[in-house]
Each structure stands twice: as structure tokens, then as C-alpha cells.
Length: 135
Image (cartoon, rainbow, N blue to C red; front, side, top):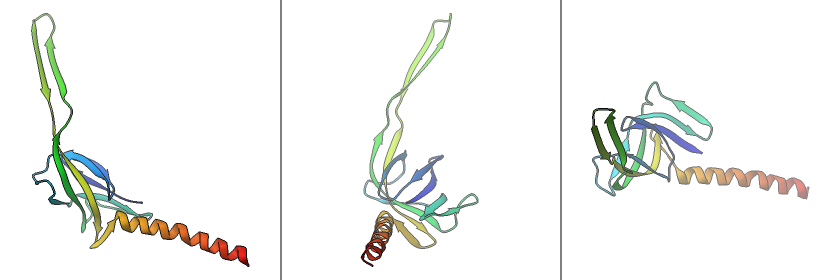
């Protein structure tokens, strides 16, 4: 399994290739490719690379799916015995980002590469079991 921990919008987020995430609004049009260079950690096939605080040469590429607004948050302020009340609402602007690949030192770590690695690893022991059974 391949994943990375990135920083965007002042928050840290664990991302995997082939999945989408809702993050703070990015200044990019829908269907545009975005590269995030603030990568804090990358894990690929059991090898963990940790930055101090960032990993040099590591990037995460994603495609902007769409822009939307989050759920409404109500803010209610009241001072007791003073008859002052304020009710406000807020909806955060959000960008839905589809993670395409995680790049580490020029090599792409995609969901397809991880899936083929898992498939080949799961098939290899099955073949050796059949060989030992036939002997």
C-alpha cells in the first residue's frame, strides 16, 4: 500500500493514489492538474521515508474534480441579561482533488503500480505451493 502525508491549506492529510479528498480551496480550474510539493512522509511497500520537515524531491500530483461548498456551520453569540444575540452562518469553500500519483525522487508511485505489485506478490506463493504439492 502506498500513501503520503501532505500539507495543504494549513492542514496535514493522508492521501493515497486513486482516491479523492476534500481540501481547502485551490486556485485552479476543474480538470486542471495540481502538484503539491509539501510532502512530509511517503510509505511504499513497507519503505517509509520521513522528511525533516519536508522530503526533498517528493511531490503529489492530483486533478481538480470540482469546487464546492461545505456544510453550514452556525455561530451563535449571546450575552446573558443584555438582550444581545447574533446568529451567523458560514460555509467553507472546498476543492475536491483526485490524487493521481505520488512521486519520490523522480519515480512515480501510482495506484496501478501498487496493485500490480500486490497481485504479483499474491500469485507468487500460490505457484510455489502448487509446485511443492506436485512433487
